[in-house]
Image (cartoon, rainbow, N blue to C red; front, top):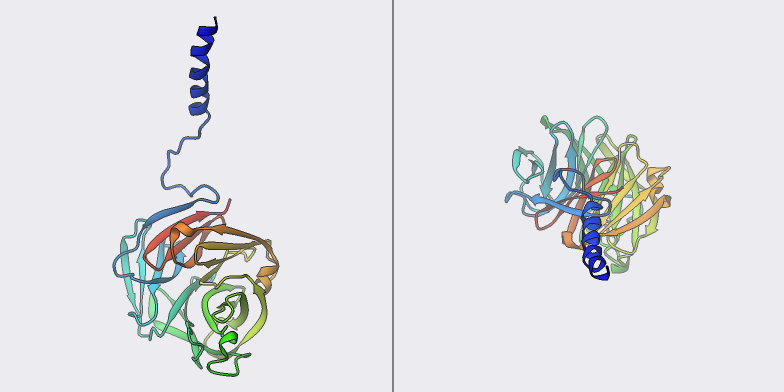
Length: 281
């Protein structure tokens, strides 16, 4: 009897193990919560991805290169295949991020300011099907008095923007102390402005990308190797007062951009051309 039990117990353990496991039959489904999934390598034309947005009408993503590269937007699918190149008559001084509003307008943040010396920055607004019709939102920061400021005060570089409720929100990359993210607000229409400082938050790392979901209840920031998600957000200008969760994504490398693909899924790009998805639930 003991010999029979000794034979069947391991067999039963193995059966329970395999029968109890979920089967992954859909490789295109959203990744499991908290799991980073590499979708593809971006096409060779995208050598330094610095911004990303999801375009639901095309079921595809747009991205662009960093400073000094051609002023092009690249439309790519989930397999990293280049679908379209949109050439713009704009300078790429230092393009750093993308945002999209509820009407489908795209905003290109020419806001990179590594040395904090730029006296005029710009965000360009356009429709992808009308690339020759561009509005320029030009601005300076209301609290910047010196160009550049003292090294410890170098917090006027912005690599992260998002749109919500008719406003653009800019999140700074602290190059001085690498601790504090400042939040600024701008109108979303062309003109010359002073970016209004709304507040700041000690995130503890430099921010490289930002995104808001459709109803503004969640804001995601990306830094190198980490996602910072704020949920139950009441006001986009003080999103950092929402519920906070940090998630490691070190395997993605030098992460530069983030966007909401839907309410529960983020898309992320890295500087070396990685295209990733991350599920929030």
